[in-house]
Length: 202
Image (cartoon, rainbow, N blue to C red):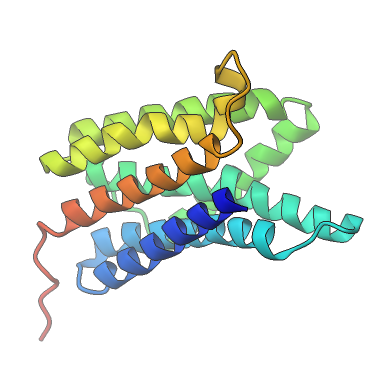
């Protein structure tokens, strides 16, 4: 309960802050921050589902599982991709982001049907942590670099602590690590885009 609450607060607060920042930016960073906000909303929905829904029947349990999959296999990869794109100076159109989201859904479903869901979860967490480290190296703002470098192992633990640790981790460790990681990622994005000038109008 506490773990889901921490993730919900971190994700919602970050989503609001990033979306508000995006409104003052030019098209390229605006797109990446809005995608980040959407990703965080996915994560917040999953946490909200854990808090508000009681799995007293199969339909509710299925809904919780779907929301959890949305957060883990779409929300987090989409968020980290947006961070990487921003740090590398890449720009994708809204259609491009939509296609990438559909590709994430398709990849998860394919590997799930192949019985590789557990391995995919582990390798996904490693890939996300590695992408955050690459983004940290590319960011020009020192505080943003440090935040992303700290977020990388936290996201890794938040997803795969049970697999990576020899002993069973405390129940609060994965959600606490994930919530802290989300906060650090959002801080890095705000630091980076805060150095940009607002879009000129008129």
